[in-house]
Length: 108
Length: 116
Image (cartoon, rainbow over all chains, first blue to last red; front, side, top):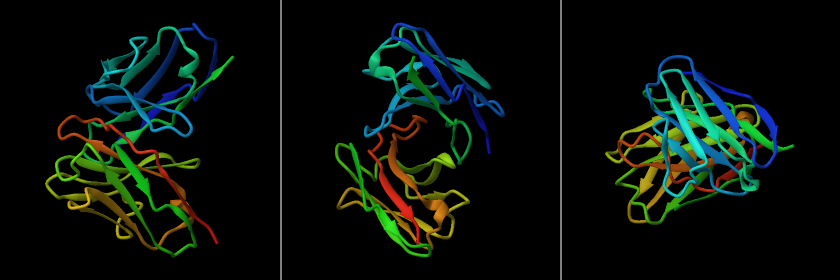
């Protein structure tokens, strides 16, 4: 199975900050990497697919980059509604698809 | 959208059947996944039923869980037998539109607690 290592596990940031979350795969996943936002009581939300494609309706302050084994999710200017937990998911391999451990973004 | 139901409290060794009811999605035309989330194991893929019918399971649930679908009800089910404490989790269903390699949308999840 492909292991996904996400970092940091948590971070504190202020509104307006630039935030970067990274995800590293144990082997190449090409560009088959998604990013999701998780909020308590809400359905998980797809932000980025294919490493850098912005899902429809997602604000442009979210962006993704990377290929192979190293990927980044960037929030260019953190907004109050962005405080949540973020997960990467690799969909390159045959099953099982595997998730990162998550990054909780908290208010500083 | 997708709406899960059927979670609850069950004793070890017991059974539960989860449902994933779809609207605006044809369950026989897309791939429907079950994913679970627990504090100890994080997010974990559990099972999938592909549009063409093949079904696959994580090693941790193989032989105990069965995925199926009812086209007339546009619903996917996860029958969970021989439940273990480590199966305690929030269970989500999610759709992969064939060939897109991402999951969207997801349901809101249903909590399964296995405890004596």
